[in-house]
Length: 192
Length: 297
Image (cartoon, rainbow over all chains, first blue to last red; front, top):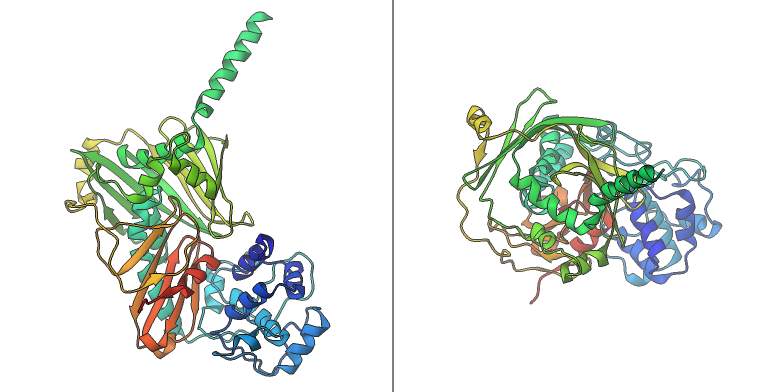
């Protein structure tokens, strides 16, 4: 896989891919790339709620048609063969965009607080509203149609992250050359 | 006229002095200085538009480190304590320690990152030198550092992604390098040393392995023998946790992000375990490592 494409993929996971990149990847004939995309959401379920994701985004008609024809995307355990079809790729796009958008603190300058109100990874991926075609603006799917997670589950996920991050930081602070100021990462969160 | 030329040459020579040492030498100084110097200061930690500040104290007494980090911004005064034998060498800094000229370690780091020095304004009232560290692949993050010209102490650190977006920023706003043992006695209640350190540690034994790692990452020998393994390339660190899980809520993949830190978790139902990768790395790397964990038969 070309480095440029891989970088786009990485940016997508970080919610920072531009629409232009999204289109470029959509049109890619690179099988490895499509496989990567398919695998990105293999364990995710996409629910449509009767609405078409990407409603405002003008992507290739082939992909739009594929999304139209696909009522509930690719389920867990789908075969690689199926995953590699155009349909699966189209669904992957939806999954990737929402996947990236459901992260905390992602997308055009959303603050941590605002993001954590609306988004936590629930393990399930929902289609969210895409911003209309608008050139170089990062593709982000925060808020919009993302159903909110129950506060209990949300705080559970936060707690787990805190515990693991603290354990990780105990080791990282001795090894990242920055020393124990690394603990600010843990403390700043706990004392919110 | 001649006088002016000489002056200009002298000024040039002076400004070149801090550049005479390569970026690798500065990295080495950085990892030494924060453990061997006495200092107290206020450091800010910024993620997006959120800013927290901390009082940092560090003293070396009788060959042992005493340090504290106290949150100033949120009312609560939580003190994080840590400290250990100054002679205790950790594998991450060890990689950087070995950096010198054209050593294999320096070459290895140069394979992974572009290192360059640049001018930097002063930070916390101290003259600083800028060190830019850019990853050569998509599997790690970049660093923009400002180091104290006199001591090499890290004054400002920005972790940036491939797109140049700053994910988190540490920066001293006040720094006092004359903090000493007398201060230690005054502040003893807040400066607690680490328990005595025995051996250097080893890589924890686990029944799983990672089938994929980005170039240059090696497992860390650690003293806590928790069943998780941390990996470093000398700058970035991430940790792989494998925990048993019964929770139905955590059956599918999930991911979190806070500043430069991310976690990616995936569940292996048949084994009843959840694999989580946590570290200051791109989400793509965390995911790829997490999905690559396997159990040799």
